[in-house]
Image: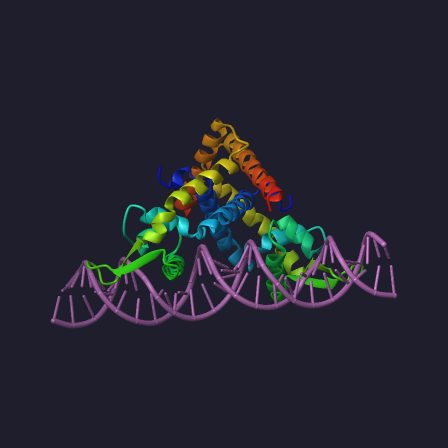
Length: 147
Length: 147
DNA sequence: AGGATATACTTAGCACACTATATAAGTACT
DNA sequence: AGTACTTATATAGTGTGCTAAGTATATCCT
């Protein structure tokens, strides 16, 4: 049996992921944001957090989050201040400029969800969410177990 | 309703995609390959092809494929020759070194598939493949329609 | 035949992911 | 108190994706 993309979870999932990011990019461009900003907005919507916590919630490595936050700080979307309770750590917060965009971001996220799931029935949408979450769970368990 | 990653197709799909690439990367490292090499191997398994065709089959832009093929050529995995029938085009082929790795690549792909789907029943696996393919189809149609 | 258009590829520049390694600050142990 | 370990962030280097713009060759059309 030769290599076959139609029976490869990785190929299909990654492809769908990239198409979704492209779609998101198009929507966010009008708002002045980038895809990697989304999980940061999500993590900081409720208030300040350390970079480590933001990275964990976003599911990316700390070094990746450092770079993303550098760009966001450069663009006036977040501010950093030293954590008074821990000299190693920084507390990151959304700026007013970023907060203003939140409603637009929510609308864009909703639009993309609808577009991607347009051809699925409500039952199928639930199925998809259930399955993809279980796959993520399986991979995370594997990841944590064998580093 | 605030931003929520548990109801975001993009967030979950992209996350799963990245976890799968990470897993693939780990396996391919032992073989001396990278994730982006996979669709090239797939496209060239049967014989030579132009860069445009490889890029199309891989689902990436031509500029991305140029860079990937440059790295693969540097690493002795592919060779390029001018297309005798079209002066603009290059014909790319796998080297013997790349062909030797194909069986190992197939085994790695199979292992990852099994690992990712470990917690799903056969019926659920079919469901997942069906749903993700329809989502890709929807996004592709949208992409082609609104450029 | 010659000029417009289309196509194949490259280049340049950026975003964002990773690993590996360094730095600095906290914690713990003797 | 001082040494060893752990933890939070930063830096360096690479791969892989994108868009936009450049070059060279084909094709088409009058």
